[in-house]
Image 1 (tube, rainbow, N blue to C red):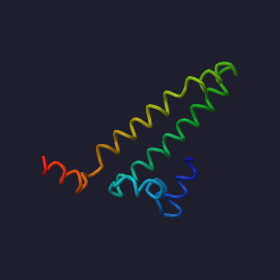
Image 2 (cartoon, rainbow, N blue to C red):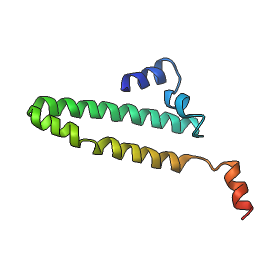
Image 3 (cartoon, helix red, strand yellow):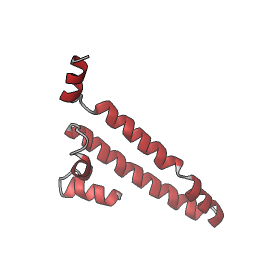
Length: 101
């Protein structure tokens, strides 16, 4: 996944996350760039961590890491959600709804 995001971002000059989610989430381009880089770094980190555990620990411990390691992606996805929520500009519909209250 990291290679795909990297290739899309730096070779094709297209932000894959924005292409996939841009119609649903309105973010400035700089925030899409940050999200893409964060996902690239996260995937590289997880791949490196997985390789380390696979080579330095027993197969049983590696399997336990794979089973109980769901905390890492869950935390990252929740953090991504907070980041998106923080940077989404208020929409016109929300400001009209608040004005009518």
